[in-house]
Image (tube, rainbow, N blue to C red; front, side, top):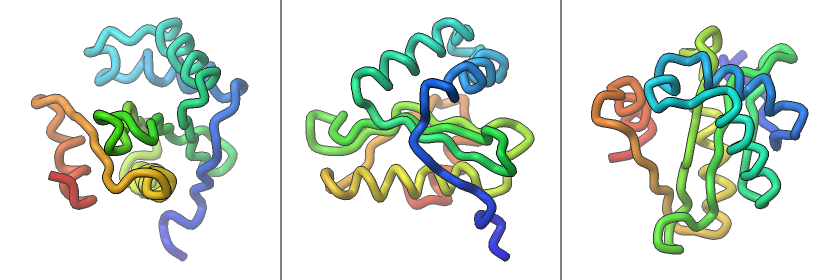
Length: 135
């Protein structure tokens, strides 16, 4: 069995937002960006209401990660990955790869490429994106 077989990726619902907002607020990376639980919840709720793409990865019935992206966020030419996060206990199990693959397929239906940004200090994210072929 492939390590990603048990990962279910589906559209996020409003019911998923509290747990994911809590994760973002508690994760050291997102704390560095001054993300509070309230800010995260409000941002995810607004994105959902605005029709932006929000997907959640679920492993064994538990939220394992999320991805938030736009179909055309880079000067209307490329899809844009706004945020991706994987809960610590699910890192290294293919959750982020599955989330990115989902976004790439959906973005690919409308845009020819995917654009994303990462901070210079976030070497883990940089390595992850390089493994996926981003530069």
